Image (cartoon, rainbow, N blue to C red; front, side):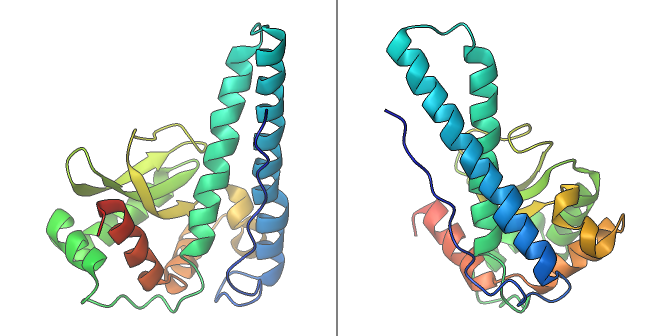
Length: 198
């Protein structure tokens, strides 16, 4: 039996972000993100049919589709969960202290995060990796390529063109600045604390 996934609502009004328009937010959430949820449901239904018929002839395509859509759904849900703030990071937060510990300074993390965002074809993702107890910035081409098993995404930045082209055209750096201006660092800190079990 296939599990049915449902798109999660935005935790803020579509027009609430500074430098990211209502129209872009609606398209991004209601079309692109919802499309990954729909795609995940479709592939899970297809896999359930394969199991029922005991016919796995097309399993490779189905499994690649599964990881693409499931990862797209999950990363977008975290992306939306950490937006809607004022971008101001409180140095008293646990995640700030960890960024300073693992990257030597917050500014060093920010430089690497931005560099990865400019180089990636899909996502720049700050993750907590329990295998070494450190924060890392990972580069994902697509949604699933470049992922590290067991790592917990806490700051995923979508750099697919659908995330910024309507507002900023090819100026990805302007979109990156807008993303950072809208971060909700309390939400990020909660994700970090959950990842480390705190």
